[in-house]
Structures are given as C-alpha cells and as structure tokens.
Length: 83
Image 1 (cartoon, one colour):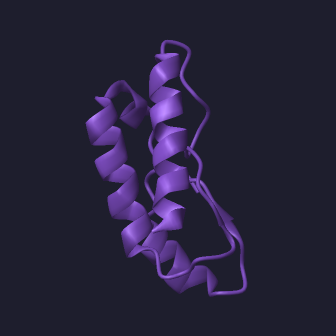
Image 2 (cartoon, one colour):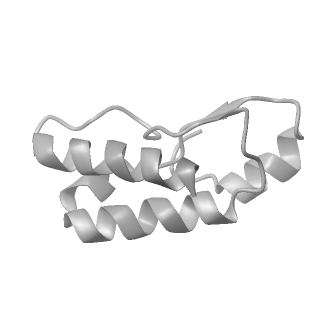
C-alpha cells in the first residue's frame, strides 16, 4: 500500500485473509525519532489484525533519509507488535 491508503480502509476493503504491506509515508523518516515512533504506534494501534501485515514504507527509502531514522522506524515497528 502506498501512504495515501489508510490501513483501516485497506483492511475493510481487502478482508482479513489478504496480507497487506506498506502504508507509511517515506517522508515520515525526516521527522524526529519521537515523531516517527508516535506515528508508527498510532497506525499499529488502529490496525485490527495482528497477522498478515508487513510494516513498511509505502515507497522506498528516500536517498537523503538519515540512517538513524530508518533504525527508529524499524525499532518502532518491532515495539508496536510486542504491545
């Protein structure tokens, strides 16, 4: 999914048996680590499924993205699934 499609709308449209991936805007990774974490937690909290979802960007990592922000995104995704 690209970032213009909400995860909740994708779940409603595709149903529980379809695996979905993506949705996070690559521009999010230019935010602070705190903002990245808050955004990821908010999206994952609203997701009704706990399986068949792969947290990912809606498009690839932009060239100028700070590597530490990619790490912040990855860490937030991992933390979001353990809650």
